[in-house]
Image 1: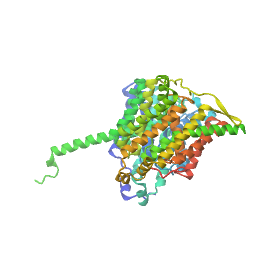
Image 2: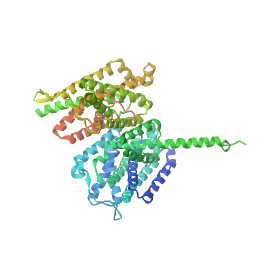
Image 3: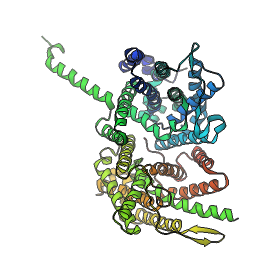
Image 4: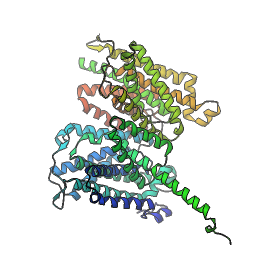
Length: 338
Length: 288
């Protein structure tokens, strides 16, 4: 099946990196949050972070291939609306709805990917932005199915083995379930094909000359990214108890991209850290009312100019500096000839 | 027949506006390689500076438009010199940087002028008969000024020493430097020109349509559609694509109806890209 993979890739696949382990452990620990605090605001911000994390993962997966994807809110809308419509038709089980929220964008992304993945660089960026606008217009133009500009409200609540998930902690765990599934899908994708994706991002022509079917891996990553975004859309619809087109605007794609770039585009940990930092910052900024958007903009400018490798890059530099100092302090441990 | 002519007239007006908006956007991409997400906010800022010049300083509208163009052009040059130039080689970072700049400008305008749309109207009203249809004078003036500005940009880029220099820089920066061209100055002038064009469009169009801190968002989307269709970086392509986009929006708006027409346009753009992945007149894409 993977006869076109270089040997080194076969050696490294399916092994978790250190940052992957930290990401996984951090998300597993997040399950304990409702046990540690009953503060509704904290749970709400944490739920928003989990939703943002799904969006950031979707951006990260395509960015690994060197493609900046603005269609994440569009596929979030597809996942969120598909689950809400399924709920209206009597499907309330959490696992079934997660499956629908993941599958619907995947199915849609396969033919769309065939068209948009032929585009490169900036054309891909702008067309994926356009895709989200198209999804918005389709929602507005199909009121009988999607509720149009009013959105879908009043659909039956999601259930977990028959228990309705409507309380604050239950909604948090619904968002958590979406985020953990999204993380496992992203881990599977990056561990299985991460090196192949990276090679395409760095030099697609060279990757092709080494025998990689780059079109195939792009066509594979795009629906996976869409499915991960769909899980985030499902969680957002559950948190807001409504599926509304304004929850999935093209402008919101900026947030998910910012989470990844500010956290660090090279790893899943970057997506997690960027989401946590920015969702918390946005919450803080929102207390500053009208300044919030500008402060967010300043943060973007600062990060791009002074933190090119994101928060993860800063931590890595600090770790390297400390390691360097230790080596200078104890030179005898480094192969002392005596 | 009357409806057809009306659609044609409205389409011509849309086309002129779209060309003016898209030209600056495609110019900056073609020469600097920057996808300028702050372009829409420059349009909005142009509208607000013109409004402030008329309402606070009491200046005549044409002078207010000139001030808007100069102020926004200067701001564009400063943004290029202080921020964009530091990372101009990194297309992804400049995209995010200009996004940040856009958010800061929108917030600044909201703080100074408030979130509500101000009363800003075009100083000339009325219409003139054009066959069976009537052409509003304000739209006609916008169309003429836009046409002159587009022609001026074309002459500047394709018939002047400055134009030859920036085109040389966009093709091969290292060779252009060897011949004494200074990217620091030329990039700043290009950004000023682009921002000034967006401001001109904003100062001319917002009194007819509407002015609000978020007025630039839809304009940015229009610029996207036009430059994707025409081919990024192509001035000729942007002009033709603006005509196609303007006509489709006008005819679809009259014969099909509001958002369905826009949806049709977006689908058409994607369909064109399946056949010509670099747009109608575009070069192969730069990375981002």
